[in-house]
Image (cartoon, rainbow, N blue to C red; front, side, top):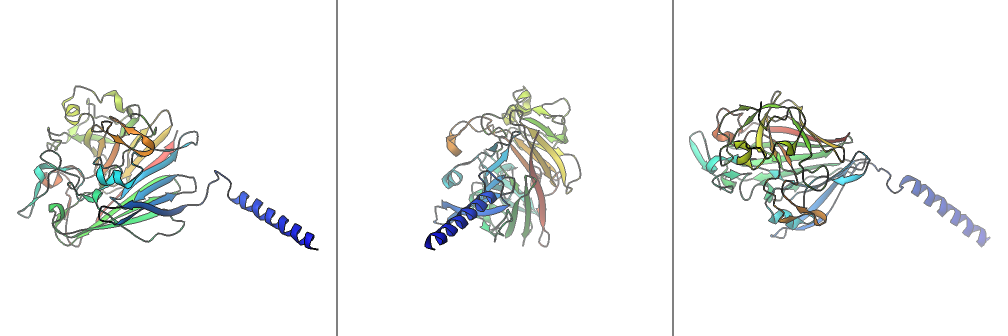
Length: 380
């Protein structure tokens, strides 16, 4: 009798094990999920988490509330092999100490403000300068160097809400600004980024994300083929401040209306290319500002990966990693050399607070700043 009971129990256990294996085979897709794990501490002793967003296809995005940084984007190539296409670091220290803004949320004002000053209603506001004589990406302690508050997460929903309250006078900006950013990973391999902000005092705001992409995962990005839906761009002076002109891209290295390899013209003897040491310019996007439309696409021939950019913003800063110089070691010991990543920063134009002809970045009390950008990954 005992032997029969033992045999029945053993058979039942084997059946359960078989069923369990059938439901969770190695490599088999699971449902969408979000999870978190410790990622270290700030210098002030604040605990920092790392959130992992996954969809049922296996695409994975990792985000930390420190700077709202996207640390990892794992997507398939044309053969289904998964690979990380975002530059970044293995540990929190890389993001607290380094300055290339890998994956970070940028604010209060993405891009440059000339001479670190602007005026609102006759009052001049002075900002710290951290890029030559100019203010860049919110200054030395912008939104990329603060700990955002993560909202509650819902199991099975790969979406993360981050909020940061920037106090009146922080980095020289007026008004208490409450910024909220929602990252969502969809089943279509889209990373959606929704930005909102409100203020209690007239201010300026221009939020963006500064992820560096390399669709091959390693090496330089010169063979990536780029297409940007823009007939004009904003030329810059020696300090990379827009001159105020909206110049046609015709017959210039800035014409990406048809797919063109990044390396095809990046070393041209064009004065604008020389000033940026490559591409570090704002494109004036076609289509109506505020309408969601596809504005850019990037194709990497070896992997077959494609990045499409959709946005409601009027501008796109296309940057080709011209200041990466091999001194930074990132994830898995990878050394980030010259032009080993590119950025597609959706935005209002640089220096808009000092350029009245540009679309306004002024936010008044009672108004809501609201923009949306989608990074969509496919293959061909």
